[in-house]
Image (cartoon, protein in one colour):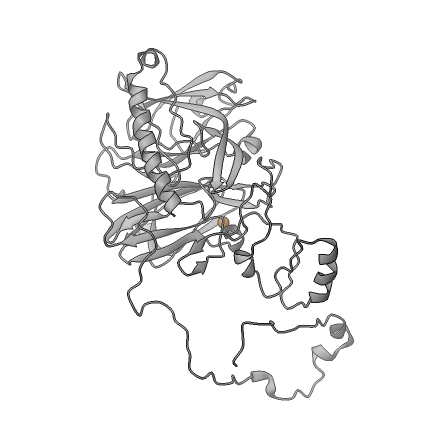
Length: 473
Ligand SMILES: [Cu+2]
């Protein structure tokens, strides 16, 4: 976390520096805007609008907002599609494709009614295009290569121009060789802020955005396998995996909005602890009030976006994660047999003679994996990484926290560290005497039971109790 804090500040400075660099170049003013490149995965602070209509900027989780220049009333952006190195978590780098130095690309923020011009330079090894998911625009600006435009050839720059007609939560991604380019990480977030007070859009104190993406990178490898359809092994918020995902830090009493879009190949039930939220918008726009109700989990299907809102009125470090338990794990094989309750001590001894690093996995569940000091290949993340104030979190992948603090300053996004629980508010050990539980199945059965049939006997397994950790009963 200390590391994240340093990255956060470094990222903020980088953005500020980049903005001024872009605004002084006369050469760039004459032609197209100088591309602004971000090299780190830090969460950048909100980019306050220097020109154009005012708005309350968003904060991109482990990402940043693309600066623009105003050219005779048109907001001009420059996206560069290119191979990037994305640090997915500390010590684990992936070779992805993205925009302007990172995957996902920078968030684009504009205001309803803005005329927007986006230069897209293709530095990929193959052609591409950009589709502006959810936008109302002229058909020829929709970015579907072959259908509405020629694909952008390698080395060329194309221009997209349209008016951001409706406020809301959108994204962008290629519509050329999508399978490869999205599996490689090409995507970005887009927010169109309302130009005036909108009856269905609340003003909030904090507005976080990120994209859900998934990758299949073998432990020790750097490049995703693009042919994978469902068996991905890395589940990411903005191409980061826990413990590489920054926390969302808010002040007690803040109204908080979190927006997310799903560009993976499966749905994700996104779950917040300790609070209830309301789905206030989709990529189709703000939801009518009559359709809103409180939830603690909302499912995001493939190609969908959701924005949720809640009042952060409970102090603490609240988990925020995908509720599919396999999506809060990092690189692992799926062809591992379930070993719970199986005594394989003898087998393990024999294997250890052949393979010195062999470890017995999962005979008491998989929790040991979080703390296991297993030799890992050079470039991968532990399967269940992440250590909290009480030990291993046994989580990876699509997991982070919302940190609600009384002392957090307005507009301060710094990580406040772990929550200091008031005395007597943490679950504790019962040290009294435990009564023997009464078992319901104690009565003898009269009819022959299924367990005594010959077929059932054949599949009976030998089960032994865990060897340690449950003494004193
Ligand atoms: Cu999921």
